Length: 397
Figure (cartoon, rainbow, N blue to C red):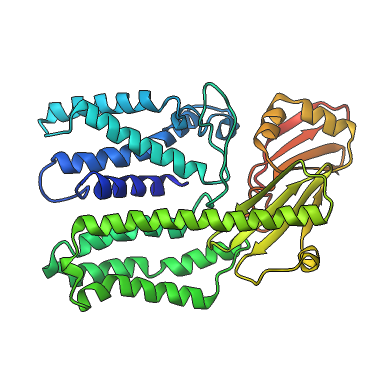
């Protein structure tokens, strides 16, 4: 999950469960605001591991280090205690009224845990047992960036702010609606780029819903009567329900790709149903077989298909390149070993560029974002005629 959504989720949890106040409320810093800030910072903290990337020349840290010890359930108590201690020292120096050290430790633990869970529901993999074990569990429920979930976490907090002062609601509601108005168009464009287009009807529906959320509560005479906590609790409940829905649709998608593999009598090394943005109904079924990867794009909004229709659905097969000495040399490289450890659905490709042999390994979990460019997490090794490595690294073009 992206860091911004983690922070939004932490702030919502602080307000919905721990009676936190708005981050930028006008009163001086108090206990309620410190609670919300602590939840938000705790929810963001695990992604601080990317700081190491800034000072390192190791381009593989994104797969070997990111989402490791700062995302670990084993290390969570240590991080919570450390952050609680820093907060208490800082609050005391400013003479702010803050929760006790124990309460802050619990608050930070909840924030960090929310981050770990929201990363687990994606397909990237999170090393929750590090440093005891370095496996990467992934629940494959939500795409790494999910605008629907982000909206469910953010909009209730905005609505709570809009209706906090009834005399200001018109100006605030209009301003926030104008800010959110372009979002459906931008999301639709992103969906088109990654091969998951959104219909104009859905874009229009999103705009209507946005307008209704910002204006109907007050026009119906109830916006100002809804308590601040109620807005936030409703948002948290909606987000939980949404994740539960993704679990259900993931189960349906996984069952479909498993049936496809069974009917096709495929030799399954690994199998998965991965979410495609931005809809609950769009999924990418992947099957790693002995010599390549099968891909079946699925739209669960369509009617159930028979076994014959399932086999007849358009699908793609991405074969591995036939083995050769250059591929063997490349796969023995320590860096390539790390890439293969990370990849769940790897495909090996090979081609010649004059006297240079090029070996590429792509993980089909990650779609091609831009036409004409390699898919994300494609590792390229260039070798000379004698098998010596000329260059290696992530392919960017």
